[in-house]
Amino acid sequence: MVGIVIVSHSVKVAEGIYDLAMEMASENEHIIAAGGMESGAIGTDAFRIMSAIKAADTGDGVAVLADLGSGIMSAEMAIEMLGDNINVRIADAPVLEGAISAAVTSTSGASLDEVIAAAEEARNTSKLS
Amino acid sequence: MSSKIYDCIEMIGNRIIENKDFLTELDREIGDADHGINMARGFTEVLAILPKDSDNIGDLLKKTGMTLLSKVGGASGPLYGTAYMQAGKVCAGKTALTAQDGKAVFEAVIAGIQKRGKAVKGEKTMLDAIIPAFEAYSAAVDSGASVNDALDAMCKAAEEGVEYTKTIIATKGRASYLGERSIGHQDPGATSATYTMQAVRDFIKG
Ligand SMILES: Nc1ncnc2c1ncn2[C@@H]1O[C@H](COP(=O)(O)OP(=O)(O)O)[C@@H](O)[C@H]1O
Ligand SMILES: [Mg+2]
Image (cartoon, rainbow over all chains, first blue to last red; front, top):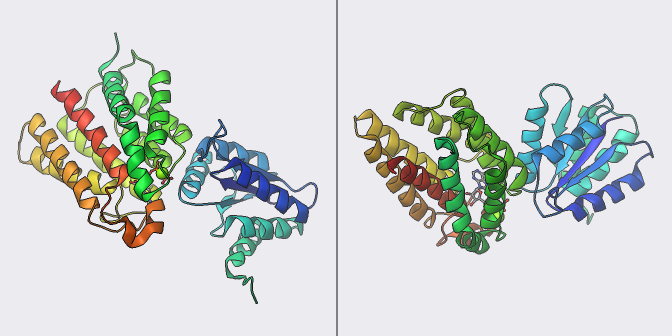
């Protein structure tokens, strides 16, 4: 199953998204919340994200959902530092809706590319119609 | 006794830490009021973990970058982290640098920041101080100016770059959410980058 890493500047945001995504996923889904800094302060830390990607991977790859600015930059650094060992991609998607779509899709046994596509599709889903 | 490269990084760190409140104030105007806090937190840790007696420039720059990467927290973390790590690569194994090495360091730093942040000149970021500073430094070195004169030209261009950021709209980073309202404010990252270059100049000029 494709693993999922949720990156946010805030520990609480990442954990909250984790809770919401897990409701839609199977119990053995590997979703890891990588929010905030080690100290709990607001921010992102490439090394924390790197550990989360490793923890999320079961061999089928990892989809990363990230919030603003440095969330993306720190995730990119983490992926570069990991080298080619893990098949990991960042979804160009809103972090909450993207994480839920990714969780549902991964639980169905989809590939990393399919999980990323589902997360990115969340950008186009209208909420009012 | 501490090595020269340690002393230089210490000078940079102290300059940033001394200006923590000002950098944070600048970020309050067009961001989330944390740039000084972020950078001071990063450099406090850098100064605590760097080996004082090592004169391996590449190694100390790399360690500085890795520490900033994990401790700064904001966009400036991966950006300065990448910058120092790329500078460290250029200086691998070196215990002294020439004026030409300085150009290679600048090139690697700019390429690293651009790869990470995907910004170009004129988007109200740290690059608006760093790119003109590099151009002025290189032009001076290439025309045979003394190192001191090249460093002065570098800092003058960086300071002008900071002034220029007041006149433009932010299109990258958090300040881009403000759009037109970002005009009139100087960019925090361009300011911290200028402090960095001033500290290097003051260190080398002694
Ligand atoms: N994409 C980018 N490219 C280059 N510099 C950037 C970019 N995004 C932000 N910056 C720089 O980072 C500074 C803000 O740093 P900081 O406040 O520490 O991070 P954050 O914006 O995440 O709170 C800005 O003033 C700007 O100079
Ligand atoms: Mg900020």
